[in-house]
Length: 87
Image (cartoon, rainbow, N blue to C red; front, side):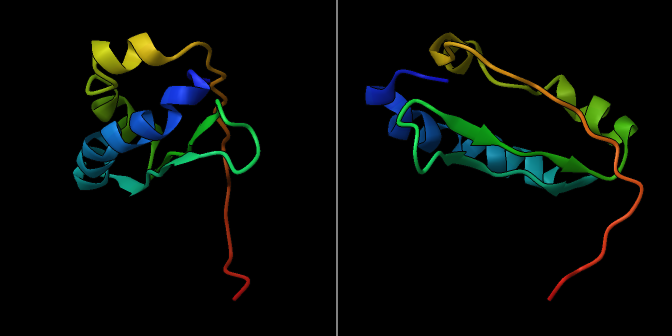
């Protein structure tokens, strides 16, 4: 959650972090997006090949400036044993 008046600016500033993550070894997906309903909500989704590739990237998290804009956060890790395309 960020200040609703600053949300779009926050998402725009995250472009560099998204590009950095997507170049990182093991990153399968890493979007940062504005929520369609809640004006203060930013959604971050990360998908990595393994816990090890995530841990290797983790030291490159948000800058102090980006962290200062975050009002609250909820982080949940899911273990997925498999997937299949529905298209």
